[in-house]
Image (cartoon, rainbow, N blue to C red; front, side, top):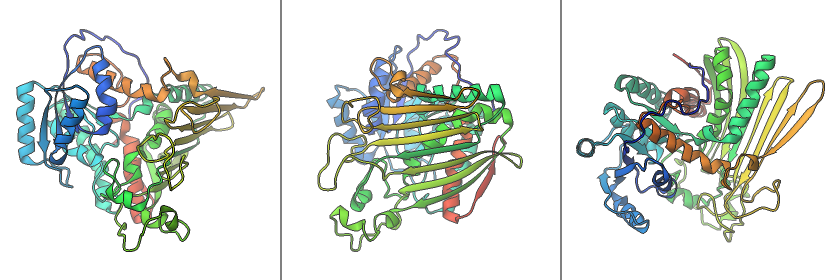
Length: 467
């Protein structure tokens, strides 16, 4: 495992050739609302040549592009992929022709996670670099099928070997790695480690979407769906797993961490929504509603980092789509983060570094507008870092997330811009340290797969890293 560092742009070279981009999932909300504007603002103005969409969504994609004043982009209709990670032969042939005719040299993948692997496998075999949304891969029914849960780890191993052979790269959009608040925390952790030699021994991460939906919504929702047998861990759950690992990755490498042991538990709609006091609040007739095969609503994971048989760090992770929200169940209130009534994005983290330091980070955000003070949650941007240090003089430091904002942009909102900029610049020869390339996601990907496996078997799962 390499020693992960954060380097700046080096030897940018001649960045004068515009990249020619194919977008898989062109009609996705993520691409249309977030990526498209950032691509247009990039200094190199990459050329969006074409995109793919499943056949039922092609007309919708064209309509959305026209509303944005964008025309002359070819959309290639594709068949919804099967659950084996393979692409339809006809679709593959059509993509191959498109790449050759249009000299495509970069692929952006913003589809649902279950479509990632077919596109990644195709692009890597062609030697085309990819920028793909997290998580790397997922599968229909992964919440309930042990073999599919194992497949996440197999996908990682396959793609790692494939990019080495083809000379391309895969960069994973886990944008918190660019968040200045988390980079600040990482620096403080490494500062204490360098001074005292003490690693972070205890970590805790929690993320709630505040996404209380009625059971019938879970059966119909297409964006971040639950109806296909995968849920919050394949949607937003990757973020806290990744950021906790990222903040200690340099220390883990230096200490020689080589094994992870995972135990995970999950709750499902059949558990959460059918409690004796829960069912009535949705004002729905739930009789005969079959929600037994839906994806997970909440995840509780406990895992340990090992150097051989020595525990280096203990971690607890909690992820849920059910959390604090600004609504009652009769009427939605205000604007919304995830287009579900009343959502507040809620996160909190703790890093305990022996007797020398504890760092707490608390974040509550939605898009309802302004807040009255830096310390009011549930408004536009509440976030607070608290650092407690021990020594001859005890010290407590509090830093608002506002300190990391640039030009009135939230720290979180600038991250995706840097992800996309790095990808486009690298397509043109810039030497940028690949902080979010596939090889630096081995631990979080294996933890995610391990949580699924453990929850299905109700047993701990252990795996080696750096093989």
